[in-house]
Image: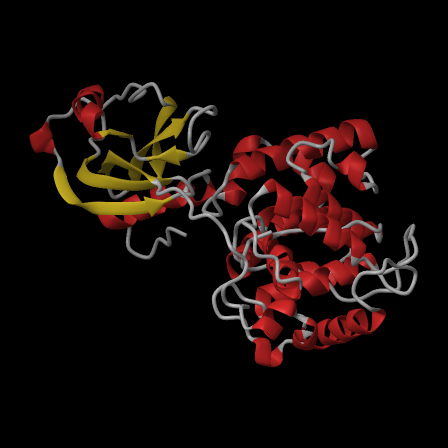
Length: 381
């Protein structure tokens, strides 16, 4: 899940294997939080189903991505590939095209690979136990717990950014929230707080996540509307805005590149990145490092004076800050092009009518928008 947003689903009467409730938070607090959750939970498309495939897809898309961004991608993906079998049978190109713009494309590849394994080894049905789920590519402790508890009502805990923040404040945990010691403690607390036979573990997990996503916010927690603020140790001590604590992340690496956009009213020249590099399998205008700009223009059969500088694009990734200089030129009708560098494995003239069906990163959309070469009325979403 995203560290700031998460998905939730409505309460149900499902029951899975349960154990007696622990001596964690009292049952009155669980009831208070669950009553609040039932009243205020957001109406999101993945809450309207208990299909394990839909739960898995939504949890994967929501990793490090905000809910409002995910909704249209989830709806389109479910419309195009509505079942595990459909996903397993789809080409990687199609999966990446449906994912285009959502980012963190490794998630899509692992989702695709895991779907094939589920069809091959599990008859197309996701395993019901968290330990089995974790054997699938791309499914870690959080995602396994979310699927098992929400889709199968298994008594499994979850700790994403939202839950970690809620627990750190409820228990006034002041250590670095990313340290292994604190992470271990948070998982222990999350397991201890799971309800016993009196409650559904999936609903409880989602209530915690919803609280973190909408009330127990990172910088400005809304303690005045929190249903359990009277149970919060950080609030009692007046340090809720200081928690959770974390060591500052390293500054992203600065990367400077050049993109060459060759276009005509009918088509644009795009190259496909190799599967084993950043943005692997995605299509983009040919790019290179600034140091390799001479090699790039030479491979495209161009001279510097053939290109017009039209602007720069800034694109921030988790560990990189990319500044891309955009140069524009005319795509000549009979020109032939070789693969423009070692990062690519294909190059094509792509009709503007096809571009929405290609796998491409948000960076490609930004570059084409700056270049202002798309036909009028074409939406580069």
